[in-house]
Length: 71
Image 1 (cartoon, rainbow, N blue to C red):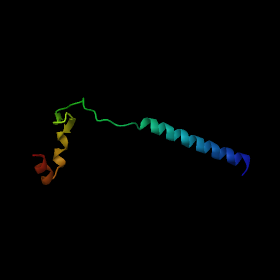
Image 2 (cartoon, one colour):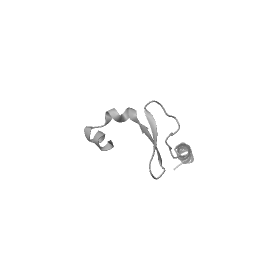
Image 3 (spheres, rainbow, N blue to C red):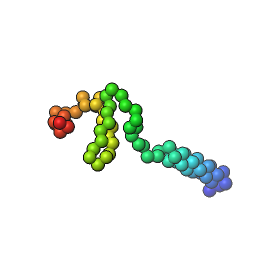
Image 4 (cartoon, rainbow, N blue to C red):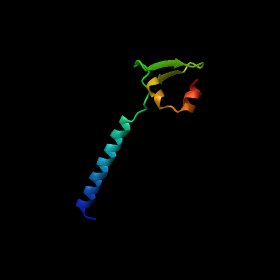
């Protein structure tokens, strides 16, 4: 392989690795936003003290079985 070919490959690999590093920095753990409530969301805390945000706007997507299990 000639020098210009190896330089092109080296440059391409370097730019790919930099791109992957930038993507890894932006893909940190995603935590739910528990503090922005609206008219269709509510907070619930179970017996273990875990706080859950409930989005009631999605209830229309439930099947009859899904609605029955939530009652």
